[in-house]
Length: 245
Image 1 (cartoon, helix red, strand yellow):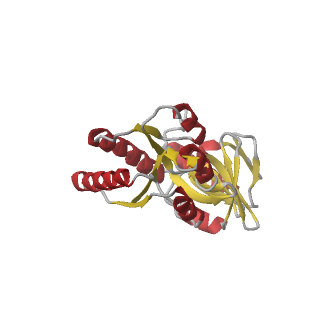
Image 2 (cartoon, helix red, strand yellow; image 1 turned 135 degrees about the vertical axis):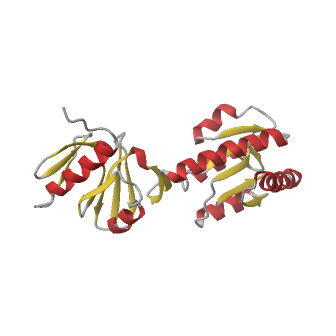
Image 3 (cartoon, one colour; image 1 turned 180 degrees about the vertical axis):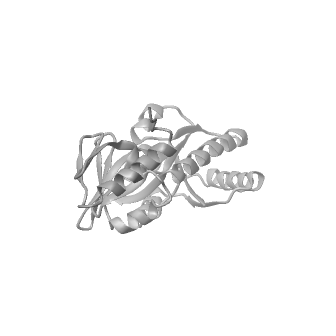
């Protein structure tokens, strides 16, 4: 279920958003769980306690602090949520991209534009959920795009997610549980108890190591090389990446 929230110090705006959400759910046949906040501190407190939203409508002009500052604090805990700023002025439009805002919605909010915006945001949320992993990392809750994950390794109780661009995300957990979560995806294989690799990024498989596109060399236990090669060849063949001449 999609979870949404909206924060605005104007009660009439909150009431309007509630009506729009309810109407949207009825007309689109959607189930959306939402919370309304008239105080940004209450919203931050919920997020700090671990509450996570898929979509957040945030007023950009709030008492004592603007929405950009609030969004920066939210990003310390959640890099995933789609932040949609609400405002009657375009003054902060450029600044909104600093916090990776999804959209900048002008007030008054019209039903047609609101419905279209929600259609787009929900569709993207669901696409991301299908090919992503939500992980609690050092920099907060992070959505890890599986297509960009080259390999993962575990050291003690620490999971290190090596992304295709060289970024390494550090989280906590067990490799066994991670493998169970990703078992539905055919492109992941576990060549070693400490490593899980995305076969899309395999460059070479030798007797003792798997070499990734980043040139990282991951160990293969004795006697497991043939099994890994067969797994990779089957995957590559199914993807029509193997041609026998």
